[in-house]
Amino acid sequence: MREQRWKKISSKKVFEDKWFKARADACQFPDGRIIDPYYVVELPNWANAVVVTPDNEIVLVKQYRYPVDAVTLELPGGVINEGEDPAVAALRETIEETGYTSDHIRFICKLAPNPAINDNTAYFYLIENAVPTKHINPDFYEDIEVVLYSKQDFIELLQQNKIMHGVQLGPIYEALIQLGWLQYS
Image (cartoon, rainbow, N blue to C red; front, top):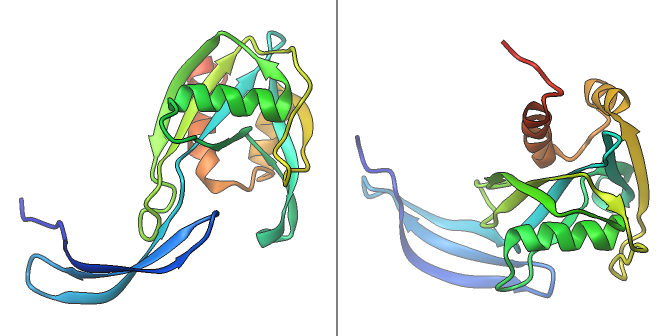
């Protein structure tokens, strides 16, 4: 199998603030070709959760997303704090954004949200038997509405293309398979 890994020749920061960083790298292909600049957006890792109540309802958050000028339905989740375990972050974000909590959490998958230009990882978990125990405590810049969907209504949302967050779709379908809600042959 031939080598495909690039060699970084140089790197310089081109932008940095509290939300993201961008850098311009010069890279060499194994065959000697050089690409300069190759832009990389450095983003924090995040964790999301597919949250299911004892009544088999899915807990989602509804919020306005400025870049797409739309109100979206999404899984609860957010940035993983430095040194924080991704599972702990998924549960913390679920509690903060929805008020739901549970002791039943399991790993679904980890993904590179956009490996062509971003360097971060997204972790996904399935939280079952979640119950409301706390008031929501969203971050200062979040305006969230908590919404619950029955199993059937949630599957219809998926079939109607109502979940816009593309990175979340694969893990959602994997969770449905793990729950036994989606059969395939």
